[in-house]
Length: 374
Image (cartoon, one colour):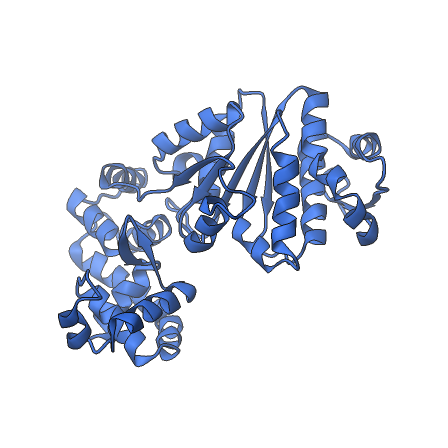
């Protein structure tokens, strides 16, 4: 039996929740040639949203190509990944891959290597010295293929902020921008999870990708979408859960898509017929127990003032620079508060959303409040 809730992987169709406004906006943007930048914390569903959008656009003349920079360390790896994805998604068999490579590469000489399944497993290799001289051929590939095949390619680049670890990130971004801005048959959707880095890359006037496209900040999915989704999943397996319990699940993990699905699943697994508050509390306790070792190590690496800052945040403090807050939580000084905040943001523990400081991991917040502070 297939489980009713999914997390930890890209979800789509019956497991995908809402995002109707974002899907409509993205479809309009990308089908119309407007580049789009998508920003949200990790595991908020950016990849799932783009995969669902691909399904939504099946009847459109669009080809989606996905490039994930999560494990990409340099330009060389990026160019190889980009070429492989474009050719795989726009060619149906290996003979066409070879033909495409020969047709669109003039200065570069790719070497084709195949895996166990020649229909889907292949890689194109280039000499790095040749790539450095002729990188423009790779960056123009999507546009040339789209124009030749009379389609629009949507090139999705995930975890884009990781270009900052390339040897010369500024030069690399300048190369991308100078070429990609010329393209008429390719729409670029660039997304990332580190808000402060993405903001710097796309909203700083000194950076190459300034004003590259429409910037979308993913918001939390509302209760009116989560509650019927959770109830429907229970009902499909002849189980039931009341709306107030669904709301407790959503509130406990602060509307976080990954954790809502995870906590819902654990409640579902414990339920024989009808979910109860006791089942919810047991499932929540299991979730905290599962993460205790990880969160304990994370807290051990924080200074006393950083821990005090998190305690103030959990207790609902807003104005951290106020003298009474600084004194009550022993934060040192107003300038020290700024340093604490920057350090916690760098550690990816907190971030600011709509001018409000929040924990990036809501289960860490829950554990910190219920287990660490008590």
